[in-house]
Structures are given as C-alpha cells and as structure tokens.
Amino acid sequence: MKLSAADWRRRLGSPWWRGAAAVLAGALPMLSFPAPSLWWFAYVALVPWILLVRSAPTARRAAYDGWLGGLGFMLAVHHWLLPSLHVFTVVIAALLGALWAPWGWLTRRFLAGVPSAGQVVAALFVLPSAWLMVELVRSWEGLGGPWGLLGSSQWDVEPALRLASVGGVWLLSFLLVAVNVAVAVLVAVRQSRVPAIAGLVATAAATSAAWAWSPRPDVDGRVRIAVVQPGVIDGVGGAEKRFAREETLTRQLAGQDVDLVVWGESSVGFDLADRPDLADRLAALSRQVDADILVNVDARRSDRPGIYKSSVLAGPEGPTGDRYDKMRLVPFGEYVPARALLGWATSVGKAAGEDRMRGTEQVVMNVGDGLRIGPMVCFESAFPDMSRHLARDGADLLLAQSATSSFQQSWAPEQHASLAALRAAETGRPMVHATLTGVSAVYGPSGERVGSWLGTDASASAVYDVPLAHGVTPYARFGEWPVYAALLILAALGATEGARSLRVRRAGPSPHVPPARTAHESPARPGR
Image (cartoon, rainbow, N blue to C red):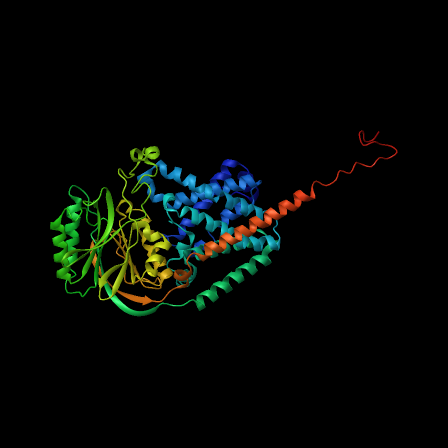
C-alpha cells in the first residue's frame, strides 16, 4: 500500500510511529561502515534523522527523537554484541542513546520551520560540534570506547585519509555531519537553499585546500612483516592446539627474510615464566625464521596477581623482557564495570567472569636494525590518542593484536580491521592489524592497503612488504584540535544564548495597555 504525504504526516503524529521512525533513521548510518562499507552513504545517512527531528512539534519531542535515533545508531553499530550480552546490549544502547538528546534539541532549535540564512549557517557549525561532543563522551573506555565514530566510515577513501592526517577521525565526523545538515536543508527548505549551497561550497573548498596542502609521508624504507593467523580453534586443550598451529605456520616463514613475526591477541594462553617449554619453543622459532616474534599472552601472571593481556617480544634467546600490558579493557568483555552492581550480566551473556588487570603505560619496543614498534591490543586500535602517543614516542610501526573469534559471522571483524587504516593515516606510520581468526590487515603510512586481507576463513601466515615513513602529521603534532574547536563553538553558542536571555530578563515584561473604551461598550462587557 502506497502512503501519501498526508498519511505519513498523520502517522508521524503518533508517538509510537514517530519513535519507530527515529530508531530506524538513527540506524541507517551503519550501512556506511564495513562490511557493507557504502562510504558514500555517510554523506546523506543522517538526512532522514535530521528531517524527522526538525519537524518535531515540541523541543521535548525533538530531544526524544534524538535519544531514540541514538538508540538505533548504537544498536546498529554494536549489533554483533547481541549474542554475547543479549538484552544488556539494548540497555547500554538506550543509556548511550540519551547522549543524542541535546543534539536533537539543537537540530530543531536551528532548523525548524523556515530557518533564516543565519540559522542555517549556525547549524552548519553547531550541529557538527554537538555531534562531536557525543562522540567524545562515548569514546571514554568505560562507555565502550570510540567504536563506530562517523568519520571512520571513510577508512578506504584516499582524500578522506589525507584529511585524517590533518584533524584525525574527528575532522571527518565534523565534515560529514555538516554535509548532512546542508543536504537536509536543500531537501526540505526551498527558501534556505542559498545558504545551504554556500555551506557545501565552503566545505568543499576548505577540505580541498586541506587535502592539497597537507604534508604527505615520505617513504624512506621498507620492512617485511609476517602475520600469523591460526583461525578458529575450539574444544578441550584449545590453547595448546592454537600454539601448535601458530608454531607450524611460523615455521613456514623460514628463509623469507622477515624482520618481525606478529601473532594475534591471546595467541599464548600460558604465562611464559610458568611454561619455560613454550618460551624455549618460541626461541627456537625465532632462530629458525631469523626474526623476533611478537606474541600476546592472555594468562594469570606468576610475578603479580591477576590476569593480564600482554604483548611480549620473544627473540632467539626467548622472551626479551619487552612487554606491554593492555591498558584499556573492553567493558563486560574483559571486565564488568561496578561488578557488585552489574555482576548479574555474567548470567545473561558472555560477560567476563573475572576482571582482567590493567597496564599502566604504553611501550615502544626495539626489534633490531633500528626498527621501533608500538603495540596495542584489541580495541585499543579504536582510540586515536593511543596511536598518536606511540608515534610521538618514536614508533616506526604501529601494531594491533586482536581476536574477534566470538563475532566471526558478524560485521565486527571487517569493521575492526578498517580502523587501522585511519590510525596509520592520522600518524603517518604504517600499521599492522594481526588477529587470531581474521580479519588481519596491513596499511601503509597514508592509510593505503598493503597486500590482501586475511579473512575469517583463513588459517595462514602472510608476509607484507611494509613501507616506512617519518615526519610528523598535523594531527600527530596538534592532536584533537577539531574537538577543541567544537567546544569553542558550543561555548560561544552558550554565551550568546545566555546574553540574549539576560537582555530579555532586563527588559522585563511589556507594559499592560488596557483596552480602549468607547461610547457603546466597556472593557469588562464588550458590546454593552
């Protein structure tokens, strides 16, 4: 049945229909991310959501539409958690979705009805700034980290990666929201099309200038990095079987002149101090392939209490002593926040039965021949600041050891692998994303792909000729400046609104003028 415009307006008048439309509109941007990876859709994906919010009958309803759209967005980008966390995924999405309520309120504030040219211009700065604040808040590790930042949908677009070197993923998110706002105005408000077009032209001009003038990494060397991906190994004795499979795949690298071998997250399930036999086997492998091996130990440590996830470098004599303990842990996956209150999550899903322990500092390791590597573990590759700090500390090559074996049939492995492209482009350093079960990927210092991905169906080792580059990108030098700019924009808005409110209060209410009397009527009884 085809619905007319009047039918749609009538249905959107119902809170239930309107709420469902908001959830669906908020979920649409997910199609921009891998695996669908419709990167171009990100430039219009927010338009239905913006159009819905601007038509809200009240400011409160606009805030509700922002919240429900945020719920839909968070559910969509984290849908792969449903088998693990079940209903708790919806609870988390509902809580985090509330971060978009102020964004919804501001959207109606600037775009409702027929906005003036000044309102449209202001919206092109205020709404992207408010969106960036949402991304900043939810990027905190305790709220799940920066998974699904809108700008990360552009991971495979060369001009966008150039812009990421200037302002990181934050600049991409800001520009994407600005374009969506302009397109929404073009679609819905004929009278305001001139400022919307002007905004699009200005955005295109500014981004073109940044693209043209941003410094390019100068390739000044190459290294051969091998990635060992054993594939899914389950059942009794899985840790021993996985080590044996990784051992077999690593032996195949002998004679291939590799500079470093990288295993995935949790590739070693035993503390090497407790298992000298495994340490000896790693030393033998290192001698055989003539390269150090970076493994990841997920085990209870013998020298201190608790379970750690640690990147450990092993050489011809065994573990070298270089070790990085994972600092940012996955909520519920590796620890349960406020376990005394939320420990029940372990009974309804696959939340961590015991909290992992945290490391205290990032580490740059010397591999040999002047190569310095900066390891990260799992979803730490989603945090732009971590890779930036490693690059500034002298890392020539960024590494992320990951395992997405619990989410093999979802879009999570592809999306996780794509994040390394942004981290490489932001820092001007190549990055290796090595996993247990796929997707493993390697990117050059401009974020370009190096070689082919190892998919979730692969159990293999692969060697990549990785270009090295040095120099400092604007993002590595200045950090999250788009976030600071957004804060200034919102602060200016707050000051302007505060000053306007103060002027209104000082002016006071308009004086009461009594109705005029006539010869035939009185103000109390008209017509008498």
